[in-house]
Length: 109
Image (cartoon, rainbow, N blue to C red; front, side, top):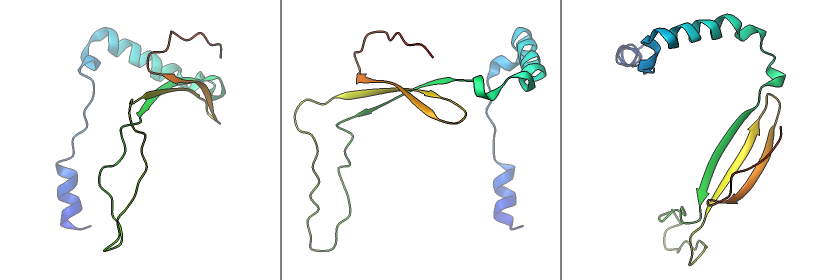
């Protein structure tokens, strides 16, 4: 093992939530650890939200020497698109794609 990898491991730090030290949280964590092997992964669904903006186009790129790089981006009103998805053990199911100012969603999983 090289000296670089040994010294890098010495300074690595794992950050954990400070709430772990609270007795009520520690009790619930212990329950979770005890019972998590009883959970069927096929039944778990995680709801994930992410977004993108139309003004996130790269401002600088590389092109061959002496050639101008042309990139097309939307002009005018910038928009934010929000994506919601249900993450399952074997697939990702889309829930909704809409404007950032969407109404509360009603959906069944």
